[in-house]
Length: 600
Image 1: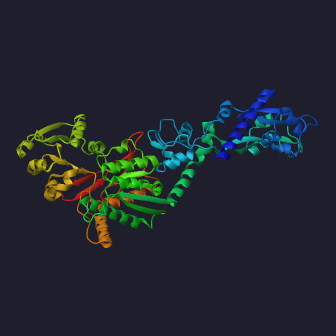
Image 2: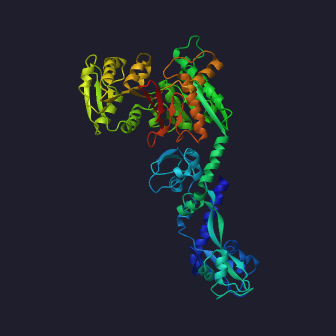
Image 3: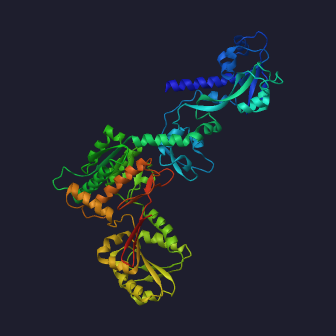
């Protein structure tokens, strides 16, 4: 660090040396896009004498006029660049360069670029790309949220297009025009560099302005946006590809910290469910070991359902080397692990708890269970497209409070232009009561006020009968995630009515499930434990998502992953928080008795 800092200060001193030219009264010329001080060489002058007269080093003269190393020519000009406003740069030479603080979230605004954001936060361009590997350079667009570590930029080497003045010996019949065209420069610039030579003569030296890439040391605080973008913009995709290859070729260190409670002779059911999750996780990692280009290290820890043990585990040095930790649902243990993730920049996966809101304030937390409000908001976006032009009939149970999902759904629909009506049920609903609400030629969506099985029991017979009787109308039922638990009793009824169910988890029990079940039995004997969601599948899907996300550059901004039971698409919760899953299932129980499940 000290070496880099010394180089930076030396480069700033160099800028200051050029700035001093203005004080010795040299005239200037515009050549190319910059102004240059110039000095006309007199008879018998030497490079040493000119340097002494101007009060600068010979090296500074040679840097812009390399031809003078081979001898001076009377009446030729030597050029020195006029420094831009350099006082801020000189002042900055005494500023401390910090190692960087906590990472912050930044929402890209209109007109901002990767380079302008780097300069705004005094962060390196490479560092921003590395922290947001899910985004290619062209995806840094307004509204996108990225991670930035302020004050993390170090002095860096960059190249800048510049002019230097070289010796050129004209050939027979060459003109300023032909020389300029051959060397890709303007005739006016060539003439400005040789004011004492009206036209080139064979064998008589002239000075040729030549473009080259000047290698400089830069400081993010003082470099201009134009210079920064001129250097980085053509290289951004190359930098991204290089960093992505490094990330993919590296190791992926995963920790599972769960209360398996192996010390107990008879652990509780929850411990067995966590063990099933772990088994599914192992199956996934084994299935991808030959396909991924990285070494995957899995470390598993038993918290014993003891907060002191959890704290002891988090104190282990190896914990800071983990890329991601799968945390338990127990509130105190989860809070401790989430705080550890924030302090040590380790990503935390919360697969189990639906009540923890740390993801709203902790940028390292990834919430797998899509929050209720997000779930219903996303559902309504799909609903508006799927059921445009339909009428809605709410099925209310006056004996029970409507659930939060229904409240959000009803508020959205009432704010739209969709026609609505409400049927209140104190007991079992009659088909005649439903039929009176329906007009011929209209498509209806029935939405219950809660997900309870008792409410389903009240309306299910009536809707089946109306479906059979009212051939002049079309109708569907919108069902809740809990309907998954009622399929044993009501699946045929749901299919007769034509039901759409939305859910965080759903297992269609297709060939992928059969392959998983076969693999599970081969490894562990028997079947996974009965649970909702199925914990073995949740472990399998979570592991596959993690590996695929890191292969794509990271958990943030990874593409939608469609698991067997769970979909994953993490989106940032707010400008300062972490990420919540936004993927959910829409399951269609069709009238031809098929089940179509789509992850949105």
